[in-house]
Length: 139
Image 1 (tube, rainbow, N blue to C red):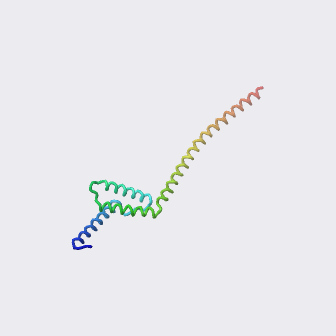
Image 2: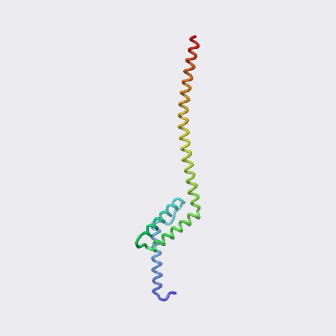
Image 3: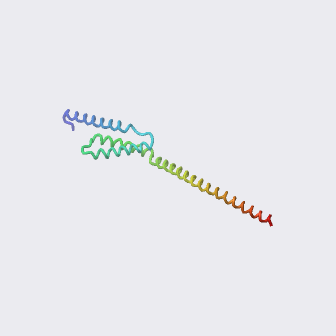
């Protein structure tokens, strides 16, 4: 139980410190992300900042708590929006496009070689035919 007016001053100071830390986090990291990829990057930045803050010799506990709350909120949004599935689907589409492009380039390089070889064989065949025809006409 609270016993004196000094306790109310302490609670008020606590709320001020929490609000100040929350405002600092909001200024540093913004209000949120609009898509899954930027949300994922924001969560990573928050995680990195939490780790670096914890490694300090005298960490700001209010700031650390505000960072963790923001990270938890972002992770909740990430899960709620099924972002991991959306990101995975995007990566699969990108991979399939790259594989298809590579396959097309490989096929074109093989076809070009085959066309050149085919023309050489046709030319050699025509030359053999002409030589054979010349020999038959000469006799």
